[in-house]
Length: 383
Picture 1 (cartoon, rainbow, N blue to C red):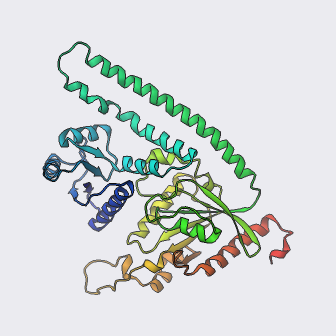
Picture 2: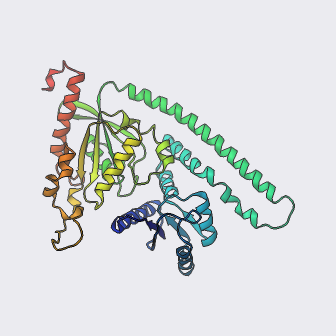
Picture 3: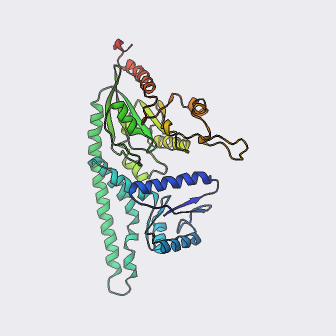
């Protein structure tokens, strides 16, 4: 079951899309659920995130339908999560813990596993107290409270020690990866960036003739993959990195900063967008904000609108009182709209159906060749 809130000024249609994304996250993690509870509030309750009346409604529904997991669309404070679980008597997850769980499932290499483990421990540390509330129910008995508190402190020290060790190990691996990047010479670097599940890995496989894992699930790729690509006679390095998402946990942004060095050191960012998604403009903003957060915003960007084969056009009713949305424009109208003109260069393709790939390669060739010529001015054969 899923729980979200609508704050003043929020668009209800957008909230529905956010809840769709939360359900997709749950499906990716292996959970199944459909029922949604959404409450309109000015601001989240400091004790239980949602108001007591709605919480009671959720409690009754869970009891009547044997629900054993409730997922909230925002990050809950340790106090909020503890109070909600006490009231509902079932397991409660927030968006952050759900994403962390998916990352833990998806991590394959030792490096990615260390990054995810670090993020999990940083999330867990302030929530330790809530894991020992069972001791409070044991009335009487000498020394029952003291051991509980000492166990929390013991666990806290163990986790803090593990966090320090993981940070040290990650620094060592970061140095090795930085050395590897330095050994690649002055080849032009292009990094694929974008919202999760927009088709970056599929595009990577097409351009680099590689076999990067691609699946219609969120965060199919965690580990950075770098491949050498040659278009005509111009070589460059193409990297595929973890996808971004709305409300990406700060623990993960911090833990994966070193992985995103490929993005920061790229010469060109190929920003892949799923144009078939009804809220793709919001996804573009999320990606741009994340790039800003990791100091990678001031780079040449090649905007690639992917999945044109899945785009669904709905004619706009001129008598409707609602404004046009993304689905009310034809692809040709999009190509001539502000979003295409403002984000030049850009291209419309389908990596899955291989639509527009020749034009994409041609555009990439021109961009890479220009940078390559500046670094290797005596390679006249390029022209």
